[in-house]
Structures are given as C-alpha cells and as structure tokens.
Image (cartoon, rainbow over all chains, first blue to last red; front, side):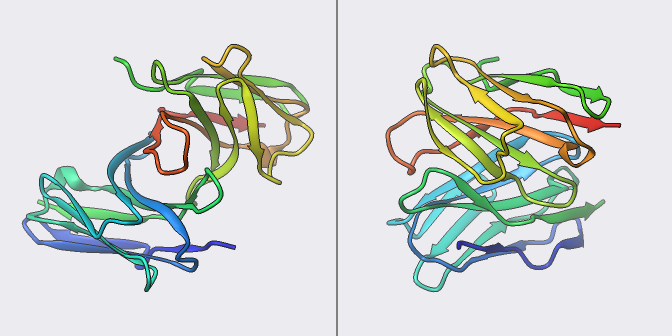
Length: 112
Length: 115
C-alpha cells in the first residue's frame, strides 16, 4: 500500500527565506507526483505536476524535483512571501490506478 | 470561470438525513473524481468516472454512498442515513485523458457537518 509522508507537519519562517518542503513515498511505481496548495477551508490548487520520467518542473518561484528510485520529492520556494502561507500537499498517482494518494500536508506560515 | 464547481459549498444536516452534492467538471474533461478530506488529513480517494462509467471505488465508499455521472458531464454524490463520522470536506476533481498521468484539477469542495 502506497504511503506518502510529509515532514515536518508545520513550518514558520520569516519573509524572504528560501524554503524546501519534503515529500516521501513508499512505492516507486508511480505515474506522476503533484504538489498542491490549500488555503484554510478551501479546495486544492495544483502547483506542479511531475511525470515519473521527469526529474523536475518549475513554475515562477516554485521548483519541484522528483527522485523516483529513492521515493522522494522536494518543493523549493524561492524568496518566500506572506501570501505563500498555506498548507502544501503532495500526492502520487500509483501505477495501475487512477487515484491520487496524498500526504497529510505541511502547514507553512511566512511571517512579515 | 471555467474551473471545477461544486454545490453546495456548505451543508449542515441532522444524523439520519440524506444529502446530495453536485460537481461540475471543467468542460470536456472526461474524468471525474471524488475525494473526502477530514480535518488535519490529506484527501482520500472515494471513486472516479471516465465519461459515464464508474471505474474504481474505494473501500471507504460504503453502501450508504452512491455516485453517478449520468451523461458524462456533472456528477452527484449521495450519502444516505448520514452519520456524524461523515462530517468532512468532499472534494471533486477532473482531468482530461485516458491514463493516470493527467493533472487533476480540484473544485472548492462541499463541507458537510452532520449534527
């Protein structure tokens, strides 16, 4: 059974710091990995999708990497801003299935 | 706005009542997914459709839950005889494609509170 872990569960940083968010998964037979952002009481906003054949994806100040063999992904946020405060979730699509398996998320607070 | 929409956004009901939620996917997206999220947890998969066909159901989807997508467009999720443990955010997502490699886009969710 695929398990996705995000550690730490919460992080509080001052504005301007460069951040690395970690995600690990137990079964490397995945189709892809997605990073999402969730604001309190809201739905999920897709940030980046990395296919299993890719090593990284970039969008603006965000960069996500994938090391499928070691079961790890990182989301790098450059020059963090208070507006980046949210819960960040990673999820994998297991090979042979169509569902996303999510981690519990990491709550990020960026202080002005 | 052409994103995924869900209705209602909030629902409060008494234990034992039936509730129905609606999801409208992004236009032309052939795949539609339902997830459930409880406080402090990541979303958990419930079921998904490709066009009208329901292709996968989670063990979480007890016989009190039923989902439909009759014309391959919008979908409904019904919960019969609600229990307090059904209180959660119900999220709908859609994608376009024929494999699990496609990006899923989520709606704003329906928050259910069972009293």
